[in-house]
Image (tube, rainbow, N blue to C red; front, side, top):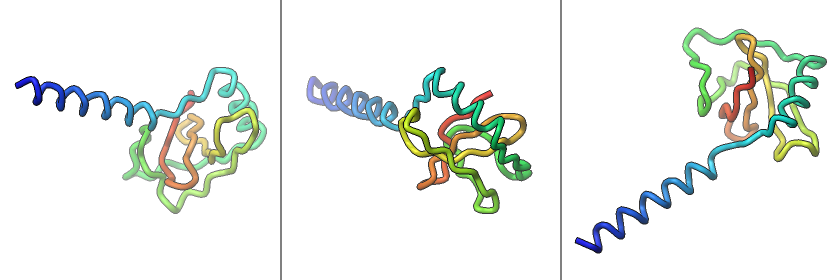
Length: 101
């Protein structure tokens, strides 16, 4: 019984660590930079009717995001403005990593 509990705890910890590794954190200061950059360089796109704007969604290929690269950000990102929100996108996976209001 103790063996099963240990395995369950290890799986829980590993799953939590994996989820944390997948979480992208753009600090409030970095968000200010992103908002200002996007305000002067908007890439406004219309949300496709079959696309739900949520973190983790894969942006359809028909949308052409802008590049957002700066040493103030932890990674190079792409972005679009969709439904009035700035959407940060991982350029390699095309996944939405953060939605900034």
